[in-house]
Amino acid sequence: MDETTPSRTALFEEHRPHLRAVAYRMLGSITEAEDALQEAWLRYDRTDTSEVTNPGGWLTTVVSRVCLNLLRDRAQRREDPLEPGTGIPDPLLGREGVVDPEQEVLLADSVGLALMVVLESLSPAERVAFVLHDLFAVPFEEIAPLIEKTSAATRQLASRARRKVQGQAPAPDRDLGRQRTAVDAFFAAARTGDLDGLLAVLDPDVVLRSDGGSVLARHTVVLTGAATVAGQAALWGTLSPFARPALVNGTAGAVVIGDNGRALSIMAFTVVDGSISSIEVIADQERLAAMDLSAFH
Image (cartoon, rainbow, N blue to C red):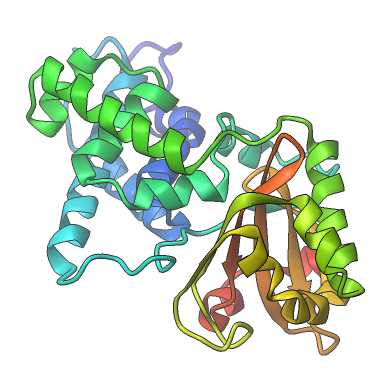
């Protein structure tokens, strides 16, 4: 090996942030994304890649294949379709004004939690085609062999996935300040039980999804419509004093920490044209306990 040629380990580490971003979008699980990267490293380490001219593209294909297999295994294990709201992926948490280079790579594209929820509803092939083409600009000709489809069929899969995404997860306002204004207005109205104030900040067709948990006292929750979501004003009012500003997948959200220091929920908001169009709530205590929320205490 030429002295100027990076070692295999160094080359893999160079591409790790990009590969982790691909795996997270594919799987919606930070732990599974890391597992996929470990499997990709093992395959890379035992493969002769001396003829590979584009190591980044080669590694992306390997990681995508590992993720596709994991997605197919998930689908086969699942006897019943996902109940609405149960497919809320792992959130990426950050503090406003604090730069995290690793998260910046993960969030290079719009991957708000609402979008990640919709990705959970796609078939494995749809998800791979959409993520690789629409989020990472991989040509259909390179995706097709991976999912064992023709280029034309792959294009159709990505198009179908795109329609689902655009219909159910509109792109949020890019202005973080505008997002935060809407979220702050939501909690301010909730704190005083101002139903009109809640209705004013919620999109008429707002969707709330929750994985359940003790905070919401039920298993699966999907609420639709501003009146229905605002009707939970008593609950929002209870949580509001404990809501701490957070970035959830790059958008304005909140981590709710009780006065005993126990995490009660994580709330992600999608703000479109100044109104809240969706709210994702993670309240499952096992999931919350496994997350590092020390930055919000």
